[in-house]
Length: 369
Image (cartoon, rainbow, N blue to C red):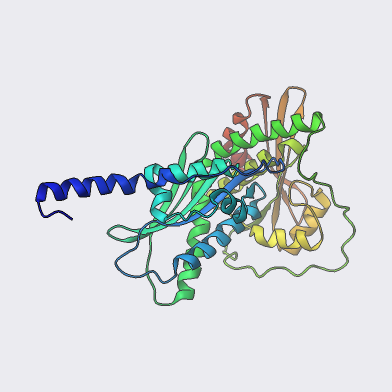
């Protein structure tokens, strides 16, 4: 390094631009087009953006493994997403190694390029770093438009690794909910577009991917083992299951987003305790039922009884000619009486009106017109 102050400044200036441009020298190879799916394809990318002055409890490798597992599990459990396998990203990168700061440089431009290379619709950044404080944040980025949706918080460092892990898992789930509420219109638009592509491919004999088959609903003699529930006993509140809406195949993913949007609205209502979706899926897995709108009313009641629900919400999204019709009903498990009914119609081509109408549907279903 030169001793002359001016020359030293110039060298530091050049080094800054040299290193800040390194992210652009990563060459990504596009992987072959995967089998088509109407699900939203998401690249989950854990990143350690900077090293704090104090040490992280988890190593970069352990943080990456844990974060990928947690976020991928949440996304796959929703039924809306197809998570890009880590092997696909490895194929796109080849032997190249990428530092955490390179993923975050230029407003995550390299992350978007990676999403393009692995044929993803979105990239989900799970970032930790340090400025004045240690922090973590989740950023969902639309690969095509560059739109970003962010949830962030500071890290409360604990000596107990298991406590930190549990707190992190809880924070990740809450962050996903926050991002979903911010990004639901974006996700819904992408789902509608992919659904139309799926319908077009099916009509032309190019469905691609696996067809979803309705499983035979054979009688279940024994009550399945229910996953342990926690935090769902609140005095004075109604235990409620919101089932995914029944719909036609090419609208399945869009319908799941509408169902989740309704859950969030009913959760905000404050009158209900929503049954943990993991418990519902656990039972449906055991009795080999599909999770996407394939539960008839009789079976819905049976599942509700097993999960000690007081009420259930069912719905259907149909296409009648050039009109979408969404109907939703809340039913009392004891009397089978309809407690609240909401419906919505909108023209084909104006699908965004379906999502926009969910808050009104929630008010009507909750019995508050």
